Amino acid sequence: MTTHLVLLTAPSGAGKTTACRRLAACARKNGLRAAGLLTLPAWQEDGRKHALWLHSLADGRVHLLAHVTAPASATLGIWRFLPTTLAWGRAVLRTLPPADVVIVDEIGPLELVHHRGLLGVAEALRRARPRLAVVTVRPQLANALVARLQPFSPRVLMLTPTNRDAIVTALCSEVVTVQPWENSRGYAEPRIRRAADTQRRRAPTVMQRCQGNP
Image (cartoon, rainbow, N blue to C red; front, side, top):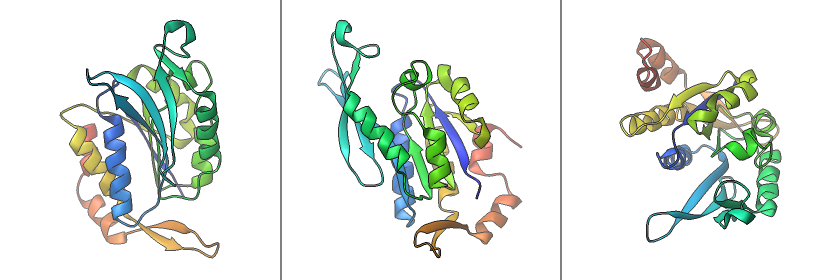
């Protein structure tokens, strides 16, 4: 089965995580399995981030990933990343269950520049064999991530305030064309709704319109 990989890119604070949470909710609403990791910010009263939490979609576990610290003790920028949580996140990726949708939010300079953090995304996708995978990345790092995940022929979508809702709708429409079924090994695998496929062949999809394709 082919995994359709989308790299969702936008600057920090543009809504990548919100889009991913909505996608996971859409998958579950339609009886599909969502797995992967979300990076959830915690905010101060003045509107600034002061902590990041790593959330496992498969089982709901949450661990403190990073907190703001003095430059002398920072891992990257203003953030001090907790090695134990990074190790836990890598373990989550190594042991992803078979899933219809996999989301990894996000892959950043810690992984692509410093070769630390949430490594092993490609291996995780091969193991989980999702119909749809979404990985978030900042625009300046998108090309590096495309090169690393080239075997999956990723599509890059730029999230903006004007197209954010349309992109989430398009990704949700891709998700709900998948029906879970139980195979002989005892776990759900996706099956395409043929009627939905026929409809998508007849007219441009929302995703195509977002990308500007005819």
